[in-house]
Length: 275
Image (cartoon, rainbow, N blue to C red):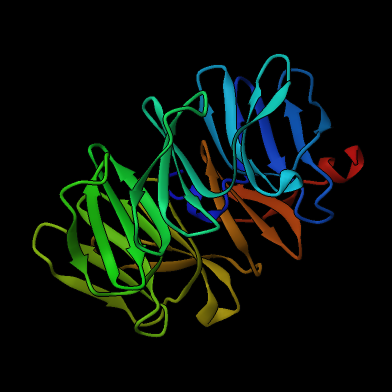
């Protein structure tokens, strides 16, 4: 759940409904209602889905990746900002996103107003941590205040899939073979896992879940404190998402789900039946 946005924000549980973006045909976004077990296809290919009050905020691939919102009850949608948005995160009363045109971080209010630029660097990814933003740029990992002030260099590593678990920044290190790297923001100490190279990375707050490109993108669970690791799924995976106590992922462009403890992955074929 901590890393759903950095994996595309393609799965979201909201008000007794599960939303999954169709990555097989890019025909829309599937919504399944828990109470009736029925579903339908929504207009729009939703990326980076966030819940904000009574709406979903997202980047719509069907609208040129414009920053959009949809009312949960009426399912009416609108464009909030006429810019291509990436890595969208709702934090408090603000929406933060990367503008795909200049790759800088921007923010606006929930109604799309008061837009301003927060970070001028060419940003690859970012995360929100209470009153700080951590972002990965070509010059390393940096942090700043929510308004873009008080900028600091955290690490010179070039990071991919940037997460924060407790006091550690966790990422694939582009500087060193994309190895899984854990950087303690208090001590500055860094540890790398030689056998793990994330193609996708997520966390439930306790463990890390990784599609390991060093082993055919099969799924591993890693203890960030001890480094203990175990392979929990032999499927080749991408786009790891955590929803409640389940792990959702794509394999061969189909959605699967499985328990966070591992076991047999189940294909979610109800999407195909609704298309």
